[in-house]
Length: 128
Image (cartoon, rainbow, N blue to C red; front, side, top):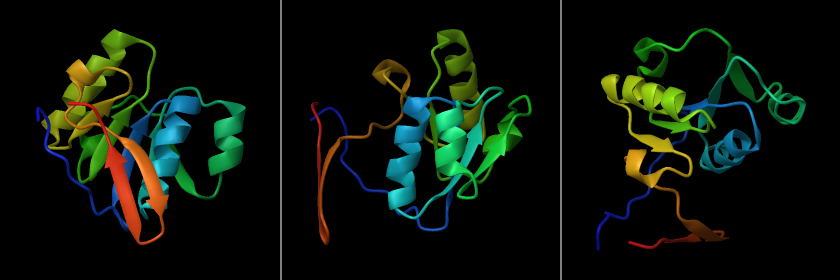
């Protein structure tokens, strides 16, 4: 086993998601199912994301800083620009926040497994 399997209690805790497309929205759906408060950080948001999350999430278009991540339970970085993704991951880590860089396991502190949710029973399946 190369990684430690764990579940995070996210009820009423903030999760920061950098990105404004479908990958960001997928991570937000997972975190929201666990009761998280979602903050999207992006200079551009897809119309579909805004439509889905209006009234249910916060949107922040400011230039990201480590302070933006302060107090968050988790951060997801869902960006195509690898350099920018690495920079934002470093900011989150500087604020003491574990980071998942979508589709970049070598840049991630944690991973989201495949999930089987049957009410009171939740199973996460992952390689490694």
